[in-house]
Image (cartoon, rainbow, N blue to C red):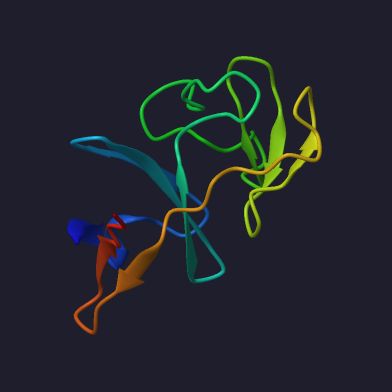
Length: 108
């Protein structure tokens, strides 16, 4: 497992990116739930953020690819607009420990 951060380190309605070794992921907190995805657009395989920790659209309601504007649902990662419509972001398995620390579940 790789420790990312504490739940409280991600503000409600905001996102945060993490790089650890081969892992380039981001988390979004929405209505108290955390969603974690690999930071790779299904269209071009590039990172999504337009600047550090900025993965959401202006309203903070959708994940947005900074390169071509594709929009993804926070809860499922499904692309609902843009060139990769119908594709999905790849979720990253994670766990939240009792002390509130978020860990990536490493699969081999």
